[in-house]
Length: 343
Image (tube, rainbow, N blue to C red; front, side):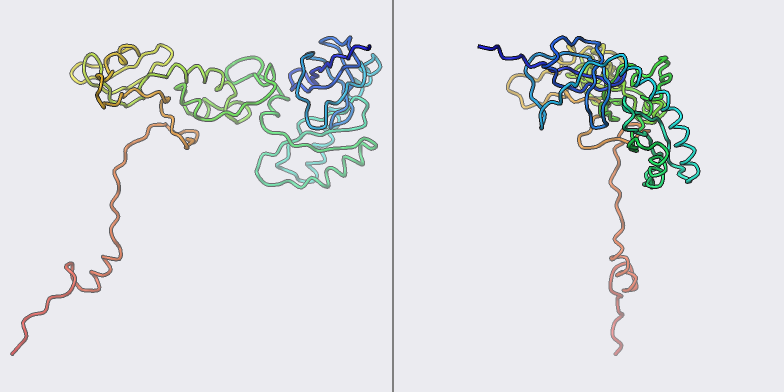
């Protein structure tokens, strides 16, 4: 009786810091991490590096796993290097042609050949929201680099920063996206507010013009640390009397409270919880809230918003229809009074 072959799924990465894609490699049991393999992708045949080997059962995607074709040979690696040397020339030619066509909002970022040169992908980004007509540019590039199949693919600002690299706004020699980030998380202004970071656009935006990816690194820690602490501008009871919370120190587990005739004092979470605990059987609601500071459900603040909500008094608008009716009647009191009838 023959033994059933164990399913082997490998994770393949096509760039130094890129997303991992999974392929079936049951027919290549001797694969090791770091080996170069040839696989078929949506962008043609590519050479990737094995980043992980998964032998546990996994849920296959729709259509099943694509197989690893073979281990890359020295000839395959040399062929890929020869095509990579031509990619910079492609970018220069494409930029020159885009300038001739007056495509001002178009920015050609990079070009990528498949390892056998059968497909050429030109990566670009647009600065404005207007749609750019690229039909003429694609046709010109197709005639220039035939028989390779030319494809123009748009990428976002974060992907552009990842490809270009460079120093980060924080001073690191390599940006996080070019150093270790393989996927971009969803970043919101709420994460900066939760950590007490200044909402000045230059402080929270990266070189790509988007919110910094590092805003999510310690977000969960701050959310957990704020539990049990009151929000800023709340009036709470303290061992020294009632006061107003002027600052919250989540990592230290303390709050600063301004108490009339006493001044500003710091209290720990335990002191506030112990003192503000309502007596048994009472209907007093504890003033301590577990929600984060300045977090408003269903509302996202724009960059530059101070985050402080001022309580505005309702504005009473005059009744225009009533004023018009008064003017028509000729007086402030409604109908004009008539004098006594003459006899």
